[in-house]
Length: 391
Image (cartoon, rainbow, N blue to C red; front, side):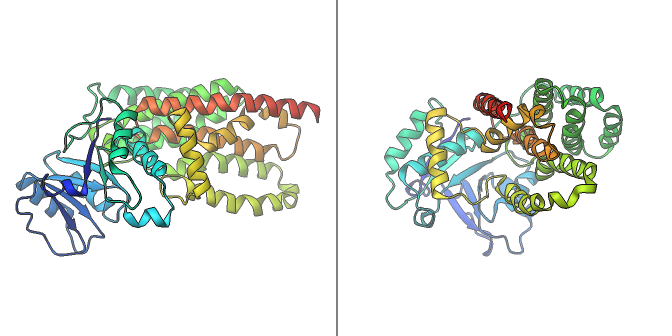
């Protein structure tokens, strides 16, 4: 979780060159570091990788920039592992999003703690005290500020075949056929095999253990940890590669439960039509909000920052809302619309799984976030249980 901080006035001194990929090739004379930015036009990532390697240049990959995907392709082609991720805030964002000093601080802090970003590029931002920002970041993440440029994160020394074998065995306990079929992926793509086991594993574990709430949560936690450890290689840890099927993993189980329940109640399906009209837009919003690109209101942003200031890491709202219903499912079984509550409760499980699919996040952060969500949800589950018993 080491990170460096640079400011606009440091760029020339540190030999940082900004290369707009929508323009022609830059000379890069005297550059020791290049930040690729902008939308690439007629650029070959392999060719750029060769140029950077030949000149022994460090590469900065800008988060949430049009160059993001292209820059990662360049890094994948490089022979030298001389690249790092950069988080920055554009001056225009301050006014557009109404960001305060506190908002900016939490955004940079979040980049390091939750995504292990190596470089924070603090630009000249209107109304933002840069000196105070750096001091607060150094205090919040003590002992982790290093000189620029920081090296990328190294992969752990343990053989990743071990968690992969354990992952296959875990799935075999719940669904042997899925585990056997996963062997086919060994001839094509090991990473795809992990995605296959992880995504379909959510169905297998839930289907077998759903009436035993604690065992279901433990099964999902074991699945999540083994998927994370199986993908903890250099490129996943540095976000050059990512878990494939993130969106699918979030919707497959809830949709499976919902349509399975709807099929059981097919004779009365018209009664559930109002629910469908509500659930479709809610489901679309749920998918769009998953990840780092969803729109966030100023109120929600400030509330998130407040939670982070007192809890260190913010728990996921989806889990806080859904876990109480998952934990109290047996109290809803008498209702015909039970499957709707069950589908909603399962969102907590797939959200927990999704947390560990972000390999770049330190694993202890993912564990702490999950523990927080459960710690808040359990008292809420008791309240729901009390209410239902009185009905």
